[in-house]
Amino acid sequence: MGCDGSGNNCQVGQSVPPCLPTGCDPPAETKVEFFFPQINNGQDVWYDISLVDGYSISAEIKPSRTGGSCTNTRCAVSLDKCPRGEGELGDLRAMKNGKTVMCLAPCKKWNYPAPFGYGRDEQQGNGKWYCCPTPPVSPQECRNNIVVNTKYVDLVHKDCPTAYSYSYDDEAGLHNCPNNVNFEVSFCI
Image 1 (cartoon, rainbow, N blue to C red):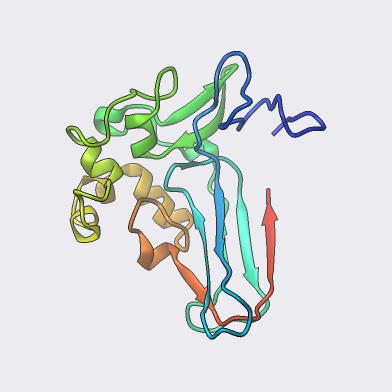
Image 2 (cartoon, rainbow, N blue to C red; image 1 turned 45 degrees about the vertical axis):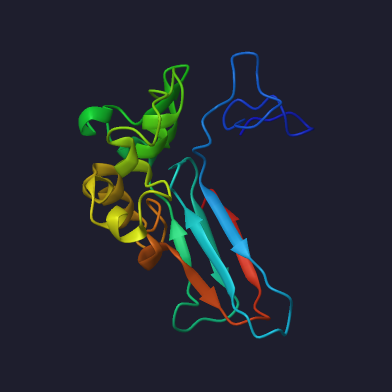
């Protein structure tokens, strides 16, 4: 947000180079993801709103038809609700100029460098259970471990029940529609 005409020098969310002289922001923006197969090949279109790294703005995906897993998905969780007392991770808010600009997911707080995170290896200690890197962590091990008991995942499941909150949160976050469907995508709803 707050970018120049070329899409650079952003006040918030410049998570890939070229970044501001102060460094890149964490890649904790709300993500909208799609997989579109070739038209008429019989494969489904897969889509999601992912808060696996964190969240920033609200988003909504509306397919042109619905039924089964082909459904609207919406997330409009407030930055004010970002957990401040997340156990050993502490405050998950990403702050700039005294203002919350993003909410870091537990994994991003664990592995992103200072000043936003702790810069720890996700293969070490509890990083393995916040980030669930594959290998060595299987989807089932991840779903049965500490990340699912965090305030962050609880918040996302309550406020955005059709979005991904952590790796392997497929039951909540992953959606699919038959081929030849159109989508309306909205931000800041």
